[in-house]
Length: 212
Image 1 (tube, rainbow, N blue to C red):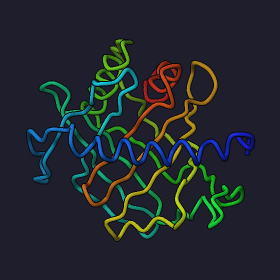
Image 2 (tube, rainbow, N blue to C red; image 1 turned 90 degrees about the vertical axis):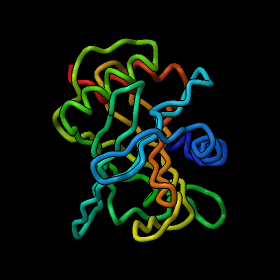
Image 3 (cartoon, rainbow, N blue to C red; image 1 turned 45 degrees about the vertical axis):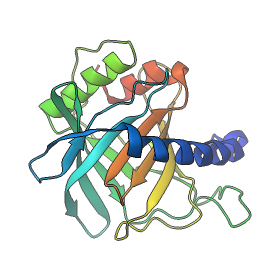
Image 4 (tube, rainbow, N blue to C red; image 1 turned 180 degrees about the vertical axis):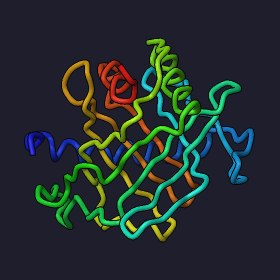
């Protein structure tokens, strides 16, 4: 794995992001509507920072032997935006009891996947461009997005329980090096959060999702 030099930093940064963004998502995202499954939808973005988190509210789920697929949606202005998020049932702890990253099991490709829902996912790409100040008129890619995923958790992910799990994603794109994105899966509040590592990642994050 090519990120050896940054493993410890990944763990430390995600720990702080989990605390800060977890509290923020509960207080800053107003619930305004409902999707077809009856799940309440909230706002897509908290714009109080130059590097905002974006939020998806988990509605319908489909389960296979190896993964759970969530229909994830939110509101940007008056538009519903969304995508399908598939999470593997076999994501092991990426951080040992001593706080050090597990270089063998901590990094796995494709254990979190993103797929298009059609028009709502195209709207997501366009909305993300606006949030980043980089308007995008295109569509979301039609093939599944399968980033390299680092699990910053000290326990295996259990999708059958109301846990909260943090990850760092390394996403291929057409602009440059892998886009680095923090992600939080909050099964208690039925919420999925994405946040670019910093503002220098915006072009690459957008390119990861955009059909170019």
